Length: 401
Length: 164
Ligand SMILES: [Zn+2]
Image 1 (cartoon, each protein chain N blue to C red):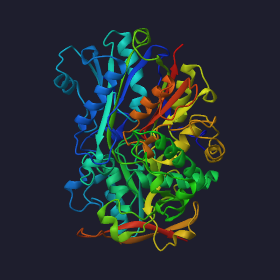
Image 2: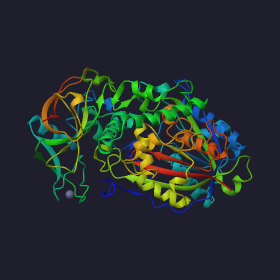
Image 3: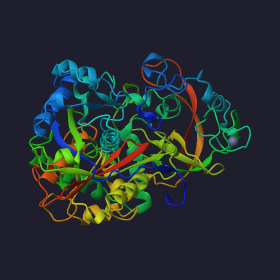
Image 4: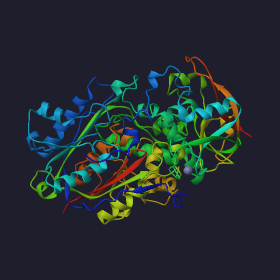
C-alpha cells in the first residue's frame, strides 16, 4: 500500500559524511516533577556536556535550539549563565524529536562555511512539573490546531496515545501484529533502563507476563506502551572531525543523515500510508550517505513515544520487511548483550526519560565510545531515528578510525 | 535560518489554523462559527453527511482546506454523501484525556472510510457498539446524535457511526 501511494518525500541532502563529530554529551537529571525550570534543566545538561568534552563555554560559538518549544536555552541564556560574550551563530533547527538527528547536518553546513566551529544543541522539558495545566505540554499543539480541535477532538480522537493506538490497531489488522510484539519492545526498554541509573524507571521491573497482564489504557495500548512524562534534558556538542581528534574522547563521527516528510502533517487520519512513518524517505538517504546497510547497525535507537512507533521505524528503516516488525521483534534478541539488534539501550522514551529523543543521541555516542550503562560489546555503528509525526529523520553515527 | 514550515505540529501557528482551546467555552464541542467546517455541522443538523468538494475540479477536499490539494483552486462546496462505510481503525479509550470526556468512557474514537468517497477517512466515534465485536473493515453506517460534554453548556448534532 505505502509503496504505491505518493505520500511524502525525502529532503535532498548533500553528503556530510565524516565531516562532523559529536564530542560532548550530557544529560540533566531525569526525574518526576522536580520543581526545576526548563532552563535550569537545560543548563545542567549543557554543563555536563562541556565537562564531558573537556571544553568550556568560551569555546562554544554556535547554539542550536527549538524556539517553538517553550523555554528552550537561547544564546542569550547561555551567555548570561556562563558570563561569556563571544559571537554565537544561532540555528533554530535544533532540539529533540527529528531535529536531534538533523542538527548535525545543519552543524556541518555551518562548520563548512566558517560560521561556527563548536556547536551546542540542547533540549529540555519540565513537563512532569507542569503536568495538569497543559501549558506547553505534549497535547497542546494538537488541541490548538483548528482542524484537529473541530474535526478530531469532539469525537475523542485526542491526544497522541489515541492516534497511535488507532495506528497500532490497523497494523495488527493488516499484518497480524500481536500484543506480544508491542510487549517485547516495552520489555527491552525496561530491561535497559534497569541497567541505567539515570533512567526514570531504573528500579521498576517489567516482564512480558507483567506487560500482558496490565489493563488497557487505550486499547490496544497499555500504559506500558506509552512514553513517560518526566522532567529532564540533554545536550550535545559538535565540531569538525579534525578538531575532535585533539579532544579527550574517542571520536564519534556523523556518517549519514536523512530527512523525510509526510504531506499530511499531523493529520494522521488522512495519511495514505497509515501504518508507516516518513523513515521510508529519510532512511535510504542516511544509509546511502554512510555507505552502510541496516544489517551493519550495532545499536538501534529511535524516537519512541509508543511501542508501535519503534516497530514501524524498524520496518520503515529496512531492518525487516513492512509488516514484518512483529515477527522481527519477537524472534530477535533486542537486549544490549544478546547478539541480535539491541534497541533503545538506555531505556528510550518508554523507560529512560521523555526528553524527545535528544538523550537517544547521547546514548548512541556513549555506546560507540564503549562507555554506556548497558554496553553493546564492540559497537561501531549506531543510529537514531528521529520522528515528529509529520517528519522523520535518520542519523547514522560511527566510531571513527 | 532555515525553514521550519515542514513541522506544522511544532509551529505556534497562524490564526487561520490555530486557536487556543482554552479560550473557547464550548470546547471540546466543535466551534460552529469556524468557517472551514461549518457545512459539516449544518449537514448533520439536517440529517445529512456532507463533505467538502473542490468547486473547480470536484475532488473531495477533506479536511476542508482553503485550497484544493489536487488543483490548488480556492473555494469548495458542501455535498451530501451516503453514510455507509467501513471501519478503518479504532481504539477503545478508558482514560479521560480531557476531563470533559469523563462521562463518555469507555469511548471508541474511530476512522471510517465511506463507500462513496474511499479516498479520505472520517474521524468519528462508534456508538451502540460492543467493543469486543469490533474489527477493522467491518461495515458501518452513519447516525446523527447530539454530542454533549460534562460541564459544557449546549450540544451539537454530529455524525457518529454504528455497525451495520
Ligand atoms: Zn480541485
